[in-house]
Image (cartoon, rainbow over all chains, first blue to last red; front, side, top):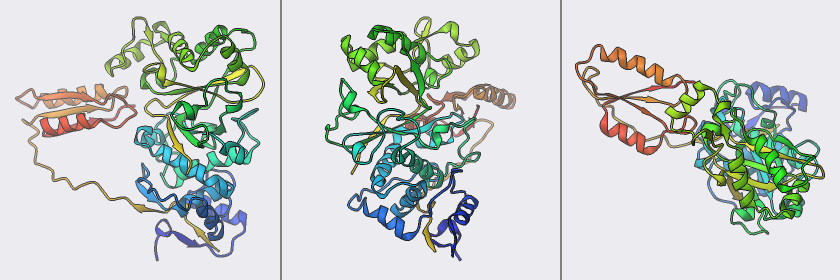
Length: 344
Length: 93
């Protein structure tokens, strides 16, 4: 008899949902929250939604196995996805398989990074993905389960089991799910996927291995210049990986802050430039021991300052959220990239 | 009830098989490679000092990845393979 890990289809006999969840936990398939049962009939419905997308998947590190579409669908079923979410989940998986994303490093690290999933384009509304009020939070099935499905794939296909391959010191609630939509309708500049060369009518998934959103609260500033001072202060962080890991980061601007910046003539590029200049970390805020480590590994300061990325282009900018005077900063793992995949 | 296994996949083809050459640890050139995490260099300096006490030639050299969080670049691996008979890696953290 084959080991369970070698069986694509498993006969589990008669089980109710509670019994299946106990069984799945014993197999190491669970993220700790209740799972739906990936029956053959349910998986078939999900597979049907990606029929025609015949691009092969690369081996998934660290486990280095090539997943079947049915195994991927089983994870999406267990997460509670609707079948129509599945092409978004598979696009997100293709994104994290970009070699520059560094999936092995991001899953095995002691850092708290989680796969951030941002959805752009018409599919946001077709799937009722929250792009507005509370977009990073609870309340919508699509946001909750698309991010969760990717997390389950990384657990079960990639092998990122907490305490074994996943060595994160403290973890991060975003590892349960971290999926939101761009608020393109209130973006006074260009939607992110269009910044990256896609057509406005394309539906695109963007992934980055990031920390959870760090709030940037500014109720007082009435000018774009004032807002950027606050944003840069929140981003200037000697404890972020990007101080020495040098990688990308997102600033997700709330619509009200975006309107003020636009009114005062700021563009995506000028915001990047200003945040780049103003968010540098003064050496007085960096320990002597860390400075030695940074210098010996090639991350030398520029005068009395350390930058929080390689150049202004490491600061990725878009708009999401609803009414209110808040924005968010999402620093990355550092040694990773922001990968975009058009949804097939 | 039959379910699809969420951890199922096909094994990827393994890397090409490499034949290891014999090494003389007393005289052959050795690379000491740090993963660029704190304390890796210190560990390797200790190894170098211990090896140096028994070796008549000074041909042990330090190398490091340029990012602790990313794989070693191909150029570094090729350089080490070309110039050294042996390599010792330190994984600090």
